[in-house]
Length: 113
Image (cartoon, rainbow, N blue to C red; front, side, top):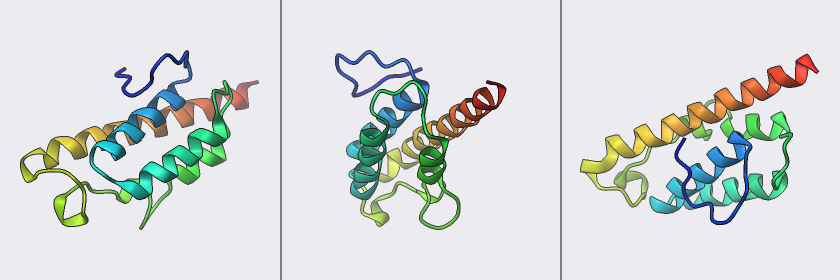
């Protein structure tokens, strides 16, 4: 798993690592509203081992305005070139999918306790 933008932090929770990686992408491509939203979630969870599933579900969302609806492109005001658009969106979608899978696994682990 690629860990970007985390300096001198001992983070073992894959959900938190993925949120940091998403924030890095949002910062890189100037997706300012999502930088703020990601920072807010990270501030709420801190470095907890157990993550509140509701927070992550709200972050991922569904439908218009959700992270699943995000598309990085110059026309949307993001700092991404046309030639880099496909790659940038693949990175974004992979991380959102990872976050969803980690959250789902976290939820299953909670149910088994």
